[in-house]
Structure formats: C-alpha cells, structure tokens
Length: 410
Ligand SMILES: Cc1ncc(COP(=O)(O)O)c(C=O)c1O
Image (tube, rainbow, N blue to C red; front, side, top):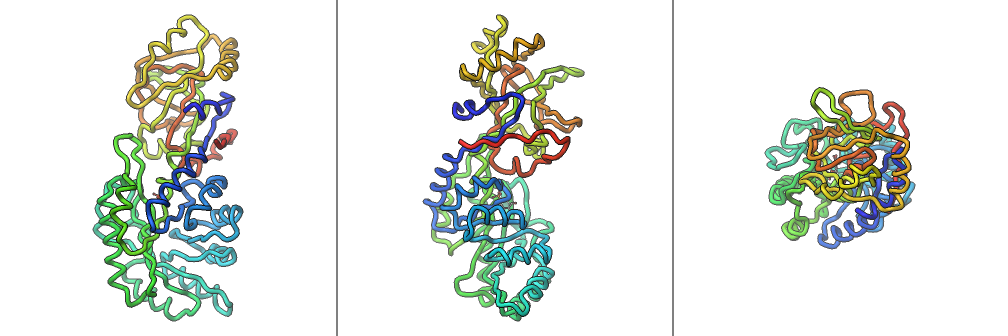
C-alpha cells in the first residue's frame, strides 16, 4: 500500500493506479503453470499499458468491438486477436477482416451470412468458432452466460445450418467451439466439470471439425471480493493438465488484483440517522461496487490531523474486518494539513456504519451497502482494491462531465 499512497498527490482528483510490476509477475505465473493457451479478455481493462504489459506473455487477445481491436493493434501489429460478442454488424466484421483478426466467435447465422458476403470474390480467409450455450452447468458463478436461457450462442436448431454454411464457404474455416459460460466462478471443481462438459460436447462433433480443433472455454475464473477464499489456479492447472489443448480468455482473474481506485473524503454528514461520507469521486468513475451492490474491499489512508482532538485518532483507530487504515507519508500530509487550515469543518466518525457516496446528483451514487469503519475523517483517502478489471471500463464516465480520474502506473 505504500507504493499506492505515494501516488495520492491531489485530493481534488480521484485516481486509478495500476501496478504493472504486479501484473507482469501475475501473468508470468499464470502462463508458467499451464500449457493451455491463455488469451486476455480486453473488456476487463482495455488500458493500452495493461495490454502492452501482457502482450509478450499471452497467446493473444479476445476483443468484443472494433474499438478493442484498435487498442490491441495500437500496441501490437501482429498479436493474435479473436473476436467475440453477440452483435457484430457487417461493418464490425469488415473492420476485423481488415485488421488481421484470426478468428470470429460466431453467435448467429446472420454473422455467417455477413462473413460470406464480405469474403465473396476476395482472397481472404478467416477462422470461425461456433459459440455454444451448454445446458446443465453447475457453478458458484456470479453471472451465468450459459447453462441458463441467455442471448448468447447459437440456438441449437441453427447448429446444423451453421456447419453447412462453414462447409460451403471455402474461405471460412471452422476451427472449433466457444463455450464462455460464466463470470466470477470461485469453485475449482465446478470449473473443471464445466470444461469436461465442453470437451464432451466437442467430441460429439469431432467429425465436423479439423483434427487440431479448438475448445475455447472463455473466462469466468473469479476473485472473491469478500476475501474469504481464492480460486486456486495452481490446483486448477494441475487438474486440467491432461485435458486436450484448451483456449482460455481470462479477464478478471488477470487484472482485478493489480488495480486500485482512490478518492478523498470531501465531507461527512448524517441525514435521517444514516451517515454518509462523500467522496471526491463517484460510481460514474468506479461503478463496480454499485453494480454488484457489495462491500468492495478497501483501505482507508488517513490524512494527518492537526487538531488536538484528532491527534489521538490514529492511536485508537484499528483495522476492522472490511477496512484497513493506513497513514499518509509526511510529504503528503504537509499538503493536506495546509488544506485543514482553511476549513474548520473537518469531521471524524469512529466505529460506525457509513455509506460511501460520490458526487453525482442521484441517491444511486453509493459504493454499495454501508461499510463499518473504525475511524474515518474528512481528507482521508478511500483506496478500493481489486479495481483492475470491470472498473474504469464499465463506468459511465461521461455522466455530469466531471474531470476524469487520473490513471497512474507503478
Ligand atoms: C466472451 C467472453 N470471453 C471472456 C470474458 C472474460 O471473462 P472474465 O473476465 O470473467 O474472465 C468475457 C466476459 O464477460 C466474455 O464475454
């Protein structure tokens, strides 16, 4: 946390901080314990420095839009790109063909028709994988894309026509199936049995596929934001060691732990018996805890207090279960103490429930349910951890047109 604290320079700003050193360490570990192919799902965090850090280690990048293709291409002209997502217009597909995408994960017959038209009378070729919504998948996943009725994948009754189209269009090469099925699964054995189902399904259609067919099992490996367990990737890698070669498209599991979102406490107030800490940030910049409505793991970084009543604060403040308290370095506190001089309205709460709110004009702008804090004061920083995936990228950054968070890299 010291390296993060050192970056919190200006309380008028909120920050994303990405630890690229930790990211490189993490991807080296993941790719060293398995022979299966690991792609990075760009949607989790499309920051170009994240992509650049991962590029030397991953098999390639899974993208869901021309914008993501462009971001990958701006980092690498030749990285392998595979393109998924439920709606791909002809223009989107044309962009993918123009930018050297290796394969398309097809989700509808429309897509195959569009590809046929785009390839007609050209010398171009593209690989396709058919996305399948398997039935009867058991998991602890937070979100389920398959095993339940969803908009994803080809309807079963279209499968035969999809095979026929792929056979009849010489420039389309059917290479296998795509099974991305869940998000934030924490259960190793459930993930292994989902993969076994995907392998079994693929075996059943072996006669329609090339010898070195691909089994893309997507992403979905989870992070336990409650901090009670971890998905044991070493154990998982061991369990799937003997499986036919798999392709993964991991997002959250790669980048979540290396990102932080930090915003300073601007004011604290109690309204109708509920206490709110208003942060100089908001769910427009960090939507994830609101979207999942959970207590996101965080640390409180204390500003130095200059008033006598406050000076005893840090001695009494302890770390609670959800929230850890840290102290600022003296350089930073000098700057914050300056600010204290201008205001006589500094507040502090102790051992209390507090709702963390942002600066949007809506009561919905709260970072999940109330948190229990040992101590929190105006000027403190709230540093949310595990903000490296589905954080900046899923936030409605334009709402109210506030200054965007500053992104820093360590
Ligand atoms: C097709 C596809 N692949 C991969 C991913 C990455 O999933 P995760 O971040 O859970 O690993 C997603 C996320 O929704 C996805 O839609």
